[in-house]
Image 1 (cartoon, rainbow, N blue to C red):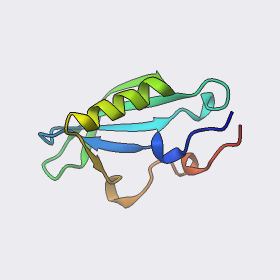
Image 2 (image 1 turned 90 degrees about the vertical axis):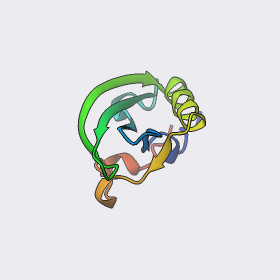
Image 3 (image 1 turned 180 degrees about the vertical axis):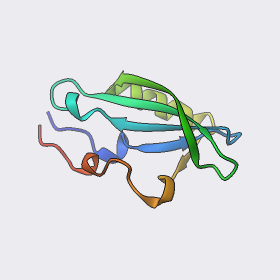
Length: 97
């Protein structure tokens, strides 16, 4: 079984009202056998950048993808990573199954 593309599980969403951001990033320790994704809730500053983390969930990959898809349907927007940098550079590499 091949791992899903990284871009499907790593990224930021911002709420329609601009008050919250969610960060989706894979749990590298669980990726090969039983993939999980961390979903971090952040409060957002006036300019839309995350200010501080409020909550972290650890969801199975399929549930995280479903949540992300539903959020996009509900009006959440993709947000570029703050400062244009990937906070976890090691997570951008593909892992062979």
